[in-house]
Every structure is written in structure tokens, then in C-alpha cells.
Length: 328
Ligand code: NDP
Image 1 (cartoon, rainbow, N blue to C red):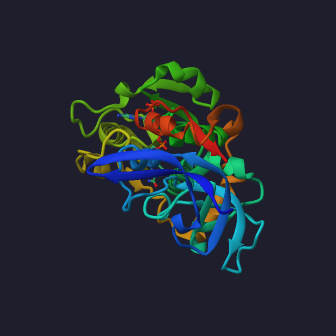
Image 2 (tube, protein in one colour; image 1 turned 90 degrees about the horizontal axis):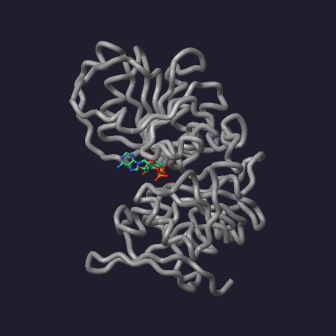
């Protein structure tokens, strides 16, 4: 393929622009594996790169932190032409040309063979959001979470991480409370398995209390900020919160009190530098016991490359429901 299409983001004099261009192999970053991209997906981080010109360390850049497709050529013997693969995270779409392109080229250390039990399409319906939701649940369970009495809170519920976490937890038999700013999405959230849907204002800390009524045995938190403050103050004894995002803010005020009087755990989740050895195991689980039952029926939508700019703007405004994948 001499020429192919990609979404290119540029930033000059603090102005960020994005447009769809015909580009060639020389426009891609270096790497051992060249991939004919079948699907990519839209994550919050892509909106930050493409709309705000933040996070990315170099411009112009092709955003898209997720991609899945078929190997066209490889300088690493571990991969050969025709192999179906996934590449997410590391510097993809932030420092290295990413998935919003018909062709991608990445270092072989970032490439994951498509696990048995997942199609390329499903792998992107999950994407970094699904990987992160799975990591949250894995870490919560490593810290003692198990089905049974008690509720698990998921905030940012209508978004990618939130929707997938709700569905994965419900499939595993947990009782899930979904917190959202969009209560009009209550039926959608219940269709994923949420028992109860509450407005995010009910779990936003406005009075600075460091302990309050114990309500959750665990929480998945893509929102951060004052919502996380509320969660820390209201976890049950020995409960854990998995913090993975900042959609609602980065600053958190708390005290030692819930930690030393309730033994709570504040778990940090990072998908970007998560080591490959463990990354492969999480993808295997996403193809197996953590594969969400409502992935294709309720959570994921398809967009074209031409529709991407609108979707990238929408995700920053909190207007995207579930997951959007891009088909090439
Ligand atoms: P989405 O945009 O799909 O979902 C975010 C959701 O957060 C929105 O749908 C909305 O849900 C809620 N939200 C948005 N703005 C606010 C606000 N101001 N206050 C409170 N809630 C808000 O994004 P993703 O699910 O893809 O990502 C969520 C977060 O997780 C992002 O911050 C992202 O950067 C981070 N992330 C981190 C990763 C890591 O490795 N740590 C990996 C992947 C994502 P609702 O309308 O239902 O309230």
C-alpha cells in the first residue's frame, strides 16, 4: 500500500487541528511490525490528544491508542504476515503514530497476538477501556473482593470503562450500583446488569467529610476528583477502590481516617506501562471469563474515519455512551 488514509493531528501556536489525509509509510513511526488496521477505538485520551493537543509529545501525530489488524510484514520472527494482532498503550497515539490509520507500524514489544476467543472487532470493542476495566476488577479481587453481600460502585457509568466494568462485574455475580450524570441512560445501565442507578451528585463530596456512612465493598473509579473523595469516605471496612481515571478531576482531598479506622485500600491502575508478561494474561481473561456478555449487543457502536472528529469532540464532553470503534 503506497498511500493510505489516516487522521492527522497537528498543533501550531497553541491551535490544534485534525484532518483526514492520504499518507505513506514514511509518515509512520518506526517499528518492526507493520499492521493493516482492521479496527481502532475511541478512548478519552484520544480526545485529549486530538481536540486539546494535550498528552501527545510530538506533532503532527496520528492519534488512536488502540488498534487491531493483520500483520503485513514483520522484522521480528515472533510475528509473520497474516497474523491477527492487537496493539494498545505504551506510546501509541501519543508519541508514536497510532491506530486512526489504515496502516500502522509499531515496535514488536508492544504487539499482542489476538487471543483465541476474541475477534479483531471484539478486541477493539474492549480496547484500552476494557483492558482497564478488567485490570480494575482483577486488582479488586486480588485485594479480597468476591461476590456475596454488599454493593460495588461504578462511576462514570455510561462511559467506556464504566459500561464495561458494570457488565463484567454483573456477569461475575456482583451487585452493582452505577453512578452517572446521565440518569436518562438508566435503562441502558440496567441492561448491562446494574442493580441500581444513581445520579453522580449523590456520590460527590461537597462537605469535606473524611468518613461517612459505609456503603460500598468496592468501587471502580474512572472519574477521580470529588467523586473519589466521596468513595474514600464511604467504603466499607476493608473495602477497595480502583482509581483509573480523571474524567471529573485530578485533585483529591482526604485524611488518614478511613485508612486507619476502616482499613480501606486505594488501588492505582495504569494500563500504559503494564508489563507485557501480565498484559497477555489480562487479554486472555478478556477473551474468557471477563468477556462482557453485552459487548456487541449494547455497548459498542461503529464509526467511520470521517465521523471520528465529531466523536473525539463528543467524548471530551461526556456525550459518548459505551464504546465507539472505528472500522477501516
Ligand atoms: P469516557 O469518556 O467514555 O467515560 C468517562 C465518563 O465519565 C463519562 O461518560 C461520564 O459518565 C463521566 N464524566 C465525564 N465528565 C465528568 C465530570 N466532569 N464529572 C464526573 N463524571 C464525568 O472515557 P473512558 O471510559 O474511556 O475513560 C475514563 C477515564 O479513565 C478517563 O479519565 C481516561 O483517561 C481514564 N483511563 C485511564 C486508563 C489508565 O490506564 N489508568 C486507561 C483508560 C482510561 P456519566 O455521564 O455516566 O457520568
